[in-house]
Length: 226
Image 1: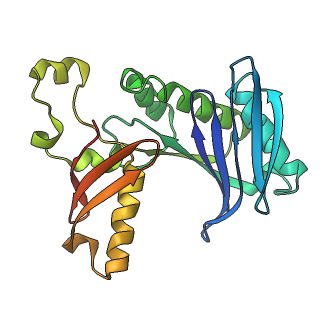
Image 2: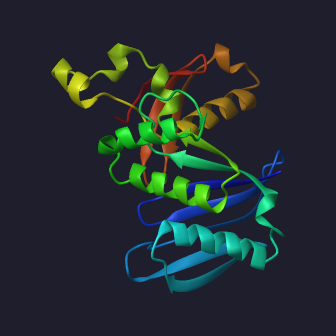
Image 3: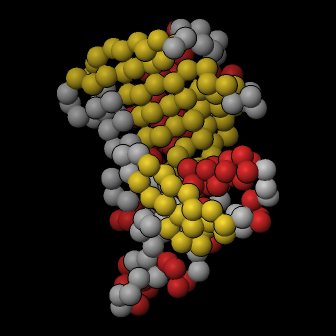
């Protein structure tokens, strides 16, 4: 089974094509400067070699179309029917507590929290709809950065600010990098050869963005990022 993993940014589209359940990366790449009107870059990695082309990419829809056509042209896949699923990384999922199948109701919820992630969520929606158009019969999933942290108690996620800010404007601690924190906690337990439900772990995500989380018995109880 071949699955596309997608991260659509405000002006970029990162992707991986994986063979599942082996989790083998068949290829990966990125399209940059989408919609800027300037010359952008399309980079794809094949057999450990990066191949880069420069071009103007007007929209995410055209970026998706270009990537899918290139996968066939390079014979990485023989037809689009080989792709059986698409997973989208979504920065802000509001109150979603787990990954969900893409539906109109899910897209509406992602749209509702655009004010909480104005640079990311609009691009995620564009990416979802571009893949819906290109692969109309393919199963699509949203994976939320915020979902893992929704087990925090009220005293952890509420700020010491007027409560009406939370009621009217959803001002609270949501937590981010949740997919990373969840994986790191699970992997830590595996390496320690102990059940995750028996452990208290501090996990760290360190990259262009950085955060840490307190994970008690497999559940997030606090995190540093609002």
